[in-house]
Length: 172
Image (tube, helix red, strand yellow):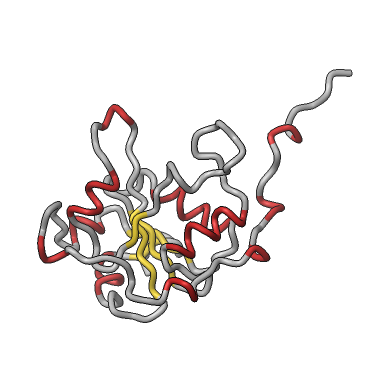
């Protein structure tokens, strides 16, 4: 664990555990249009060994036009199950810039009931020697049977979220 926070881990902490069963590594890279970067393309070009890509444009609430709206528990479960992630896993989330979009995905996992979710220290990607296109880091998935992994509906922490309509006060 990092000395900075109980919610972050150092690159060396992760490197020592890369082959540990029950460890899910999530690349949450997402960029603003002005950045001119593509998180999925960068993930495919080079990533931390075993990392799966969390598409923040796809894992959203299906019944709203608002971008990046927190999905309902069933939608979230469907997406993370397809990635092979279980609520019992130790989930380490990182992104390309360091700590730009990863905290949001960390929060989503926490809201949905995952108990052991960590952020990789901002220097993580660079420390682990990742260079886009590096053949050394061309790998995919965590090698576990995806149909066994789920994040349960029952873990959804509904009291941590509010409906926007509940915030507005009716005029007297």
